[in-house]
Structures are given as structure tokens and as C-alpha cells.
Image 1 (cartoon, rainbow, N blue to C red):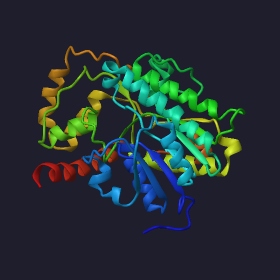
Image 2 (cartoon, rainbow, N blue to C red; image 1 turned 180 degrees about the vertical axis):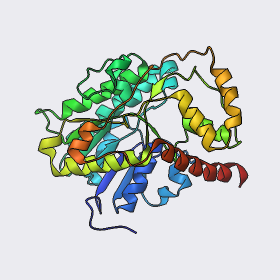
Image 3 (cartoon, rainbow, N blue to C red; image 1 turned 60 degrees about the horizontal axis):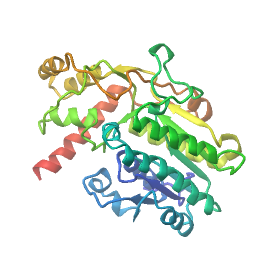
Length: 342
């Protein structure tokens, strides 16, 4: 049921990366709030949350390339876009290591082409949210954690560098030169229903635990991360988008970190997944496989707090880590049964 007494009702919202994990979840919630969602898709890949949950029937999908400024300009002007969530990117750290060109092209050029399209047709724009990442900070010592918004960006690896570049480009459009209503979000690792990138730890390990594949650890499991549940992320995106539209002079140009401020090791993540799927007996084998493995091209320790977004928007994560994992496992149980057994 669409509720009319909310900011998003009947808003024209552009979501890049709508066929991805976070984009699909965001589109789902926007539709529930009665927004008119326009999604940019590069290909017709259908093994995604967008199609599995039939969201493609409830939004307007437009095929095109995020690095094509004229294509983006037509969408912004013809659809009278009011809010933009720029989530499209080459998201896999591993691909960034072997194909930096693709990563830079998608993540950097895609960002400035979109911002230029908006600069060309700014008349209806109320808010622009550009998704950066905690990887933009690069590697800091553990005693410097959690990351703070004013930490200098010191990325090293291709994916991290590409996101930091997009981050800085977006900030430049919020300056007095252009006065864009734009903010940048730097969130920690995100997990939850719809994450069908099986190189990621949650989909990969859950699929194995449910009997649809095998799991091979890529490192020793000692890396420290912060994982936030996707429903909490979507809730924050909507808070930021609405707040920015209502108070652009106050909020434009701001950087917003978000995490749970609860660091957890990769080993602990896997232990939780194996426990909650009833596969504790198999976890000892995973521990053995981890011994002596080194992870190349990834940051050792990352986590974030949510102090600033709590001050500005009253936001805090609603889901515990274990509660989010339970929801994620249940979604994958349904999805994998549908994919492999029907």
C-alpha cells in the first residue's frame, strides 16, 4: 500500500545501479513509498533481485551507459528527475585489481558524466546522493578506527582509488561554483537480501552452507570489517535524500559515514553464518583452510561509527548483526530453492 503522507510520494527518482544489490533494495522501498522510480541499466541481466522480486514491473527501466552524458541528460530533462541516487559502479575489488581500466571508466567517468548531465538540466533537481565507500579512506592503523569524515583520503588499490576520485568530484559540484544539492556517503560493508555477487562473503558462504555450492576462503580470516544490514542503509539513504531536499543550504557538500561501530573479523562472520545455518560441524574445515593464507590487495582493518548521521538525521542501525544475518539466510533459502529446484 502506498502511503501518500511522505516526502517520496510521487517524486521522480533516478537510481543508477538499480539492477544491483543496494539499488534493488532502494528501488523496492521507494516503490513502497509511492515514488516514480527510473532505473538505468547497462544490460538485461535478469538473475538479480530486481527481477526475482518483480520490481522491474513497478519501475521504469532505461537501458544505456552510465558513461554516456547525452543519454543521462535526456533522462534528467525528459523525466523531470527530482532526486538522484548514484549507486552504479564496478563494485568488485578483485576485478579492480585485474581490470583497472574498466573500474576507472565506470566509477570515475560514470560519476562526472552524471553530474554534468544534472548541471545541464538542474531545474527540477532537489537532491543528489553519490555513494562512495569506506575503501576511499585507504588503510589506517587500527588505533585510528573508526574512520572519521575528516580523515584524508589515502587509497592505494584501483577500486579504492576510483571511488575516492568519484567522491572528490562530487564534492566539487557542491562548492559555491555550482551549488549542487549533493552529498557523499561513505558506508561500511553492506549485506542482506538481494546480494547476488557470489564473490562476496555472505552470498558465497550462505550458498555453500545451504548445500548449493562450496566455499573457499580467500585469506586467513583475520581482517577486521564492519557490516551493516541493507534495510538500515536504505532507511538512511531515504533520510539523507529527504533532508537534503528540505535543507540544501545546510547539508550540501556534507560527507556522511555510516557503520555499526562494531568491528568483526572475517572469521567471526563465517562462524556466525555456519552456526545460524546449522553447519557448525563444517566450520573447523574452513578454519584449517584459512591457515597460512594471505589476502592481497585488500585493507586490513576498517570500521565506522554513525555519530554524524545520528546528529543530523536521528538515524542509527535498527538491526543487530545476527538479526540481519538471519534475515539474509532466509531470503537466500527462498531464492536458491527457486533458482536451483524449480
